[in-house]
Amino acid sequence: MTDLATYSRTGPVGTIVMDDGKANVMSLAMLNALHAAFDQAEKDKTVVILKARGRHFSGGFDLNVFAKGSAEDQYLMLKAGAELALRILSFLTPVVAVCQGNAYPMGAFLIMSSDHRLAAEGNYLIGMNEVAIGLTVPRFAIEIARQRLTPAYFSRVVMTAEMFGPAEAVTAGFFDRVVPADALERSAAEVAGKLSTLDMAAHAATKARARGAVIKMIRGMIDEDITPQYGEDRIRSRVSA
Image (tube, rainbow, N blue to C red):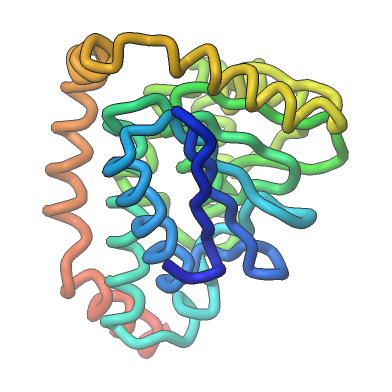
């Protein structure tokens, strides 16, 4: 585990903090660090609080990799991101996402995959802006969005790249509630503490029943879509553009 994502435990709650000193971009290094942190949380069987330091929750995938990276780099980054979102969606213990700043696509996917989502009041945005910057939204991401966003907002988010501030993002389905910024840490601890009293076997079994169909669908999409050929195709399209 690197300093890009640190894990600490207090009783039944494990806290994972992203901090790259900038925008918490979802590079392969950041994603690998997050996987390592979730490995430890899984071993400890803790309720997880996922949060970030700085002005941004996450700037999303590393766009420099998409623009200039090798075929392998592009494939590995997208694969690690998709696997992390699916891992959170199916995690055996509850995951609480805590957002304090801008959350661009991959960051938004992690938030939507979590079980309880808190946001601080503030002047920032969350959304999926792929089509605004020339990227086609991956199928796994569309299905994550479909199972959390409200129908009236789904098309606006996925197909027209509209971004939303915290209050409207609750209506859209990105967050469960917004709290004052100075109450965010306390609210997250309270939610995680309450969730830690659940019967975890019942929680895991119920989550599997409730999300089983979409988890199976996303698993198939990742295996079918995100292969080494994905990176090679992106390189080919870059050269021919």
